[in-house]
Length: 227
Ligand SMILES: [Zn+2]
Image (cartoon, rainbow, N blue to C red):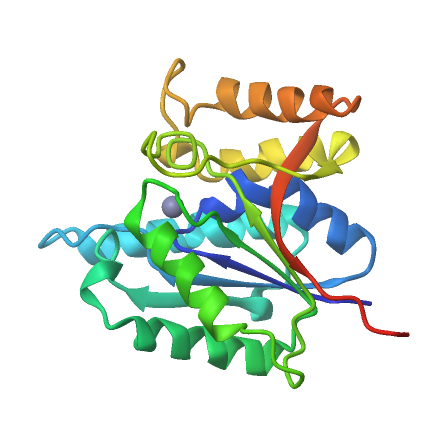
């Protein structure tokens, strides 16, 4: 059994980026933990608490579909869409804390050049918290892609260039169902964060390597021990 940790800036990134892979890890008997950095709700006076609770309930429902235990889900409190106001060290410390608690061998997180600022900072903080020291339990780090952020980055930034493909054909149904729990975050096609585009991307990522449906990742690091 492997310990797997997903670091996501907002509740819904985990399903968009690696929902099928999460279901697959659970199916294989691995322990999957999720740490959300923000509550995903922009600060707006008055309706804040109700919206935060709604988003949390969507996350619990989505992750229940994928098979993640509620006790392995941590909701963060950093400000949505403004993690850049925080000293990076604060974000790093929150990731170091969860790494210490969960002892993950594998981490999935955001791509470094996503358009969304919270995604970028989460990536940076993961890389800092998981610097490869011999005491670190983390052996593998993969970046997932999130529609309406990864593909929207600047032309001047290096593009997401996947080099790991995970077949999720038999977990596609679960991913769709989990995504439906976040239907309020989804937009109408042809918005890239639409149900149609999520399926189209899974089909494209699969077809690139001769699979029906796949999730694609960019490998950040793999460390293989002697035994
Ligand atoms: Zn996000």
